Length: 467
Image 1: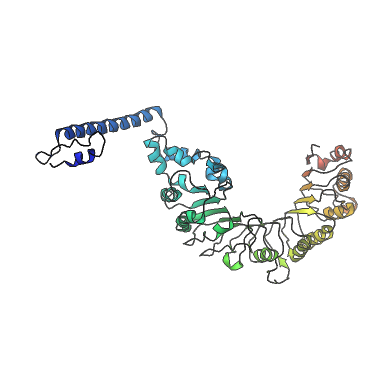
Image 2: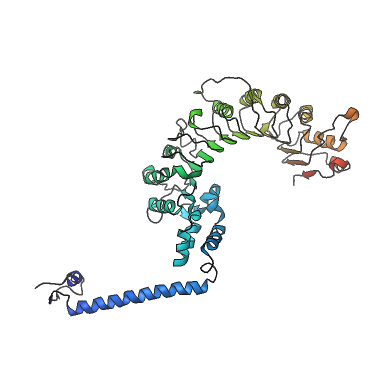
């Protein structure tokens, strides 16, 4: 007895076991023919229903599917949520490893067939790729990333990869194919944000030189308690030349970065000599931030020659060791400096800052000083420092606590200083437009009303502490 192919399959079901049919004239049996006809009709009904749903969606959506595609695509672009197009907030999708919602492009693609076709044919929707180093909940992430990269066409890419804070992070082996897929598109990188543990840093090396990479942010998120070895080295197969560079707890060589285009530099938990070399090699640098900078036993001695930088306008220094701060400011001459922030300010730094500002022939417009809480601050030293900044427009104090009378002295000077003194000498901070002090101790509040009796102080904005 010979079975038709269909019946052979159906004999595997419990309802058909032991009840085979006979193949007649080379075709399926009558029962199988009837079953095939029913299946064909079911498929036809499903197709009709799918088409009906498309027509229903079109009638319920009188705008998107009736607008010209370029207008509908622009509406989709406007609907992107904040963390879709700003990689800085890319980790908002994740809460303890659980996704809060689909990224907007996928969400738009799930509405209907028309929306899906429109979304998948709009490359701009797919130019920002954000994910966290967690085990994917559904399906392999590498397929999703490859599909995303394909849909972005040949447009420049903004990529953000952030660390995972949950209990069960993904392994390097799991993410190696994903990172390899990103490396294959390194020629299209425009903005690259890496906030990842040290072991992952070496994987992001790129395969092709980028044509439009202007922002590079590499942060080693491994804490010192988890990572006791030397800082990981960041190095790509090509020499990136960004205009905006941020590096945190990473080692690098000046030969690993192209410095000729750099205008903004931020370094945190780096070595002192690396900071000096970076500033020295970036002739167009306009903004520099340094935080928690320390020396390193492996540092190579560098030349102590002065650095006269003709473009640096903004300098922020936070929690750099005092002796290194003095050495750094002693090396710098910044004649076009407009904004300066230093934290924490103490007595030892007054003369150093005065010398630095005087040597730079500054026209400083913004000054922010963060004090050591509770430490006595020299009144005359602060006044001397502020007298060296006659063009100051914005002044900010933070952390000058009880027992520190320096702020009272500044308020008194503001309340009693004419715009021009005898002999044509400018008065105390004659161009001041904004004065902010927070978490500061003030005892002489009566000086504040007197400040506004001077005509040149009428428009002075003063932000006061609440307590």
